[in-house]
Figure 1 (cartoon, rainbow, N blue to C red):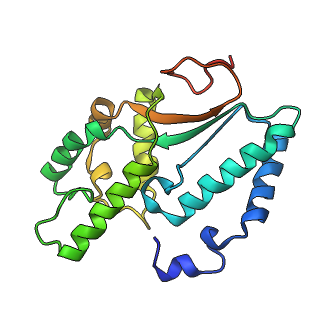
Figure 2 (cartoon, rainbow, N blue to C red; figure 1 turned 30 degrees about the vertical axis):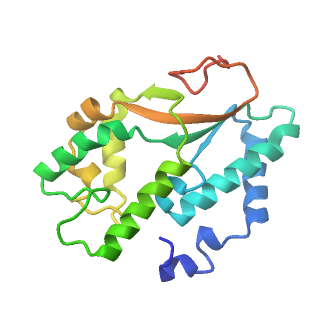
Length: 197
């Protein structure tokens, strides 16, 4: 995260040359010819430096790809439906996991301020939910993939404390903000390829 020594490492994505990273992604876009590109918002979802860099590089490559014969037509940002998070927190806490976005009984005033600043920055960067994609059939795979992030997510991380059944009930969709579309769309959408099929 910001302020950690690992983020200062010259081989971290945050330290990568922006123009070089954009050119590398643009080359992939030219080869693969995606109709849709998806990334994080400018805050990286929750302030992760590599996610911020990924978002900025993706937006730059999307814009630069406009001249390609088969340019990408839609750009989305991942977003989250925070109206579901109280129930996520309650269930996670029942299983012994502390929700990082909630106050902790032993947090200091400085930790409280930092948490509140992070939540405010997350809210300010997040766009409206324009697109909800049903992922109910893929929840078990998503849960297993998150569990592989052992360097970032402890087993007591709130989202890992939830079972796949909890996920199907509480977060049955992946949510997105459509930032740019070069085709006509009708909001809300339930498919990232709406208007392209």
